Amino acid sequence: MSSLSSDRPKANARRFVRRPWRLAAEASALVIAVAVAFPLYWMVLSAFRPAGEIESAEPRPWTLSPTLDSFRRVFEQQEFGRYFLNSLVVAGAVVVASVIIAFLAATAVTRFRFRFRTTLLIMFLVAQMVPVEALTIPLFFVMRDFGQLNTLGALILPHIAFSLPFAIWMLRGFVKAVPEALEEAAYLDGASRTRFMWQILFPLVFPGLVATSVFSFISAWNDFLFAKSFIISDTSQSTLPMALLVFYKPDDPDWGGVMAASTVMTIPVLIFFVLVQRRLVSGLGGAVKD
Image (cartoon, rainbow, N blue to C red; front, top):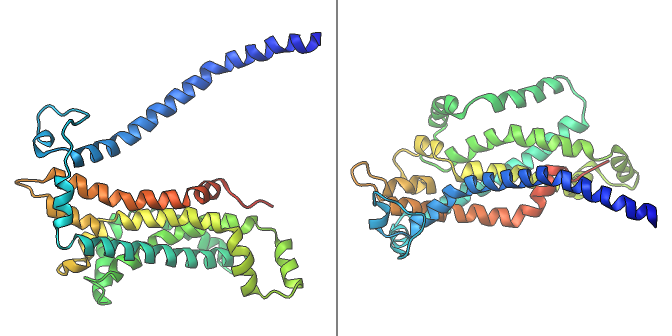
């Protein structure tokens, strides 16, 4: 008993020594979280502010007279619903296509041995280093030659191409972490390669698929560069980021409408995160272990 009682002050002393460092880390994390969340808070606040407060020379971080006028102007736009639907179609197609293709490609480069396999993996990394802006003009001519300008395909195909290198490289680690003994056992039990891939391997690497799908969804949903470059004349094929231009006029910008439209754009992203947050955490941390 005496030894236990003597160890308690030492343990308390160690906790006391570590506490300042822990408090400093928590305080730093809180400051970073506030800094990251403040623009989002200001966007939502501006969406509910009346026009007089938005244009005030002395802005305040609160409002005493919230209003829905900005949201009303947004939803009164005739094309806003079509823009929203187009964004859903583009983001959904990019997520589904990139997940399926990346899964098949990651399985191929991990489970099979073929020439130039290492070169192919290096090319995936190199593709991530090329800025999107540098490829916009060449992609414009490619889409023009294939007759895809002013169509949703001009937005879907580039986003699939840009999301695949990251998705394949990330999924490669998940596929590699699945023991080969499990694959051999499945073959001994009579399972074909296709059945093993979709009924055994696919569920095991599903957290990684969720993590890559988040990247694909956000990049496609928030895209403005491709939408502005490839949708030239047919505004019915525009997406939500292009809807912001309706409220932004150089001479008289409607900042309340811009903030309200941006808030509406953020809601689907938040819903998507809420739906996949558990899988996302396990996917980023690596859920499959040998």
